[in-house]
Length: 365
Ligand code: PEP
Ligand code: MN
Image 1 (cartoon, protein in one colour):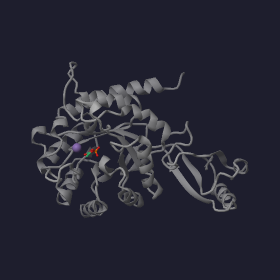
Image 2 (tube, protein in one colour):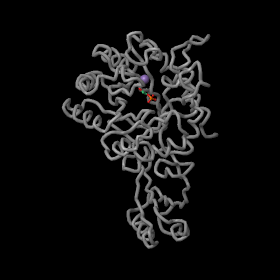
Image 3 (cartoon, protein in one colour):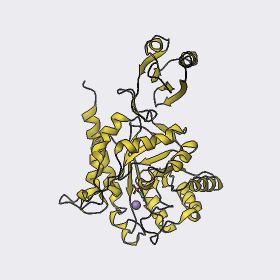
Image 4 (cartoon, protein in one colour):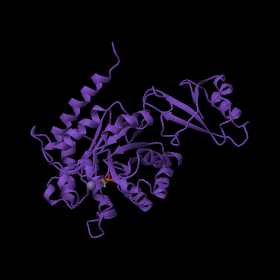
């Protein structure tokens, strides 16, 4: 059961809800606060045998807005109030919610300092402060390039500072990587920030999920599992929130099936509205790993652009996309990398489609 308080509720209102809840045997009450751009909402979650707990005594308490019984297991990331604003969060001066779109354009895998510098210069020139930089790469074959690992972190962070990058999406595949990133950022004087990416191969690595959930320094970009149901991915994502870290963006990246051919995966961005309805998280789309190739249509636009359009028109508020200064030299996923001159074109595409989304969803005058 979730008891949502009024936006202007006092701490004493929350305390009386908790006191009442704890009168029911075996029931524990946990207080959660969701800070949105304009309002902040307190919820009290009742855990345990709540089936026999009546809703009315809570509904009549001062400061209570509503009481709902939740059946979804992902109660923290789940949306209990259909009309409420997606609260989102702020990290290193960047706000993640549904009011704007962030494009994280960057390297799938960091290879050379020169490429990182060219990439970040292009990101800055395009007016962005967000990028992606893969350092720990989970590869299908043990003989493939595994990423440069912690050795490249000092110069990545130094260059990020130089080019005004505020947030880098960076995948971690082991709890150790989080400590390595934290140490390298501290050593560099924290010139930038990192969003910890959980890749599709680790969607159900529950120990890793608990680890990134137990720390609050870094937000988490959680990718759906490529071969499990959306419901299973949502339950896995809840692990992060249930350990205490609510700063999560949920990312769609396609699902594995030959039916998506010739694309690498079947693009699943029709799930954007489903996720916006079922969760309170900002939603990201990764068109690069979904489409997986740089083919261009008769209109001159890459399939990747049109996949981005599908996500943005449905309300996605973040895009994770692979670029490379020289895709033919990339050590990982070169065939799906866009070239640097494509970045301003992609941003224009995003702006036009986002404008259409805003027009289509504006309240009737
Ligand atoms: C990535 O974004 O670099 C990546 C490996 O993605 P995914 O986990 O979606 O395959
Ligand atoms: Mn990749």
